[in-house]
Length: 390
Image 1 (cartoon, rainbow, N blue to C red):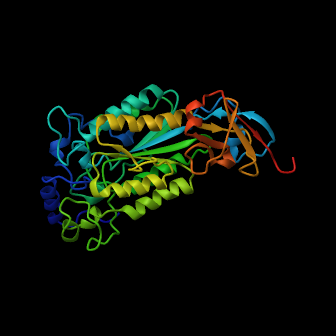
Image 2 (image 1 turned 180 degrees about the horizontal axis):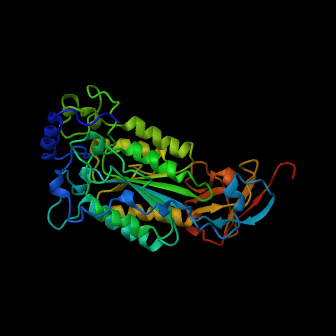
Image 3 (image 1 turned 30 degrees about the horizontal axis):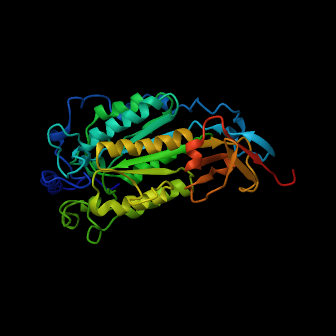
């Protein structure tokens, strides 16, 4: 991260652009326009350290070997245990989240802001599953940043956020009352930190959900003279002090998502909140790179209304809660396994649209897709595994 704002000129620029609104929120609403009465509540980073304890709700089948390392190949026919997944939310708290879902300024009286709509949709989705799925969250940028300091406006909360564990839904929802939307959109850094924390355990299925309303920015290494500017005043990146932090950080963010799914084997759902305009292709690319795109257009899960936002979280919930399984054996050959759902054999689909596919073969994680997911339950998924020379 670059040094703090270098001059009063930067501060003046912040205030001037803030009065006009912003697509992404680095130069977002004025602080006194959005901070609520709960501003003195403890911030997210003060969450009890016990949240970093390991998840204590593994599947009912014995998976001790998976805790210590990759599974051995043991031939036979097995019932597959429904995984108790770890679900990490990466949630946008930038200044523009105070705007309306269908506008680039504050919502009219009685209409929810993007931040409020996100809170309500998340509440409806995660509270019923709080004792079934280990959930955690990282909010970005940091709580109540000082907009006169670019390292705060684009910074992350200290600590690990809220680590995934059972009964965490109330703690995640409490963060919405602790700090209002303010600051930039350091999406790449937030995703990377969340993935590092989630990667600490490979004994259960892991999923990330990014919910954001704008294009990623906050990368001080970009060239403000040539970059795509995310501010309403697209000339401000080249003219304002520290304008590079408002440059579109699409390449680094896409590389981060690609690494999370391709290397860490953690799928990433992408939810786009509000009308994204020219930045929709960025979220499309991120959704594809995260391995869980929609079949149609857009590829990310769109949320232009409260109903669409609720539906997006329902899609994630249904997939995560019902369709990930753990085998007690890992075949030497990834295709040396037959999977049945309710007694009917289904085929492997590497495109992850219809059938099943490995999420992490070495640790016995597989997921069902399409009709197979719709008919699966905690007790009707099984398979036969063959091993070389056994």
